[in-house]
Length: 267
View (tube, rainbow, N blue to C red):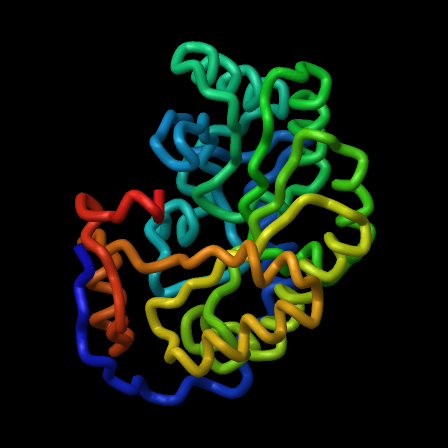
């Protein structure tokens, strides 16, 4: 069931904003230690038809609609460090028990601890029984095309680049980051296409006009026709803490869903 709310134009955001590349590095120093990374839980779930998930700590964006803001905003709050081997072991155990074939790292941003992530992907490749969905905001991959080259050597990875809005202005409103960082999200898709890494874009559309959505699809076509065809719609899920943050920010979604009423096509 869709919740339709009249759109209220929020106050204009700062033209400056923070640098998500610099924030990624500061987060990495907190959540990574000797090749290990902080995680806050391991779980199974219905997404993608069934997937084993490791929820990591630390992100380089501050999205107002984020459902995982506690570990995001409190990265040193005692969350446990796990090695790549421990992460993969936990994911494998969940997948075997539930007969899943998909694995992922979610919750925050997987790419800020790059070497840790790559080692997890190597373990997926070595096992050969599972596929890995890399959910990312893409900013680090957009900043450094060698990251796309790193991913190109894996045969069991698919990248889902989650765009925060449809344009620079929406991106800055929803994340508080510099508007120009939105271009890094699009550049990630370009870099992945250049290295033939299987990928598709998803975009948060709860705050977007039809015109802005149309313009984004045209920008995606310019990068790769396949991205426009495989474009995934993403909407806000109204968990109580998400509702409260949206209220405080003065931002009201055009379309959103209660967590227990998410349409099957969005799962």
